Length: 416
Image (cartoon, rainbow, N blue to C red; front, side, top):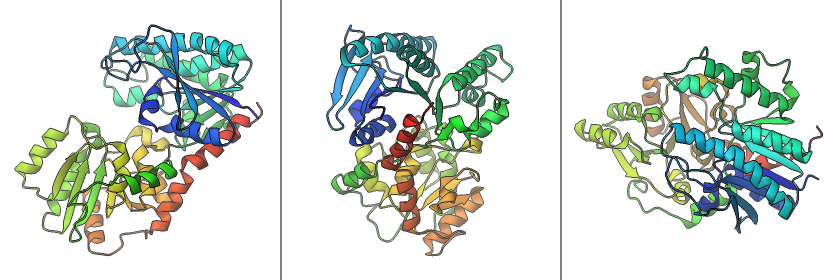
């Protein structure tokens, strides 16, 4: 049994204060299974010129008492935005987490396995190098495809850019050197084949563990943190709920288009969240007389279960087809929607889609189908594939962190 599991995630430190998140939940259930996880993250806040802990020390340990797990806050510079300072912040973490890990090992003992997680690849490189020094296994977790994400989302770079080519070579090196790979994307091996790397990276090395939901915490919050909201409690309207960011990429303008077609129906669109597009969308709703659209603002995450569990239909982002989605999706709110045991409405995604796999909701391919689906459901009829609460609960259980951690343990314990 590989008891001491070190988790490296540059951005994990916020989980200590939020008392939740992917690696927080992994640590929770690893601890219950008899393991001793330790989480290493940066002491600087993501995208803000602030630190979680103000200290000159290379690292500082805090214990997350609810899950009995140490968090090691590693010193890094602060940064604001996505410029040069953010890159230097990544380099800080890469350098300092290795130094901190050695000092931590001298005081608390060596790891039995290292679980290094992206977003950025330097954390994975640090994990591989530390594992080699300690003579232990390194499992690399890829939650974001770098540099593929840069190519898809940036207008500055193409696949033929020399810097992107260098990053692709670095990515391949990581995949080759890691003892095992965990992807949050179901079709990650399709990506490896597309890159032409299958000869160097066997399928047996690649594993899939999506994001998920802590059902225990979800059910507790649903019961103990209720939101008093007359729109949610209105028995005479069909409630379409969206929770999350309100940014251009979420394409909620399309949801307002749909609302415009349903102004005369007993349908109300309730939008929880914040973002730089909220003000413009609110102004548009006012100017178009969309009284059936209500922006509720941001709420603490603990209130989300009570909100989504009282919806008649929970909707995902309205993003147009994305090149990265062909490998799978992993939005956190999808799994909360499953746990709510209410149907989910997904837009355009027709491959590697858990909503379709578990019959946990409905998929529309265009605006007319979105309108038709909501209109049909609001009228008390089914639309396309049938849905039941049991379908959603089955999906939630498949993506519960208790289930996902059991899958992770198999990978961590697997012989190299």
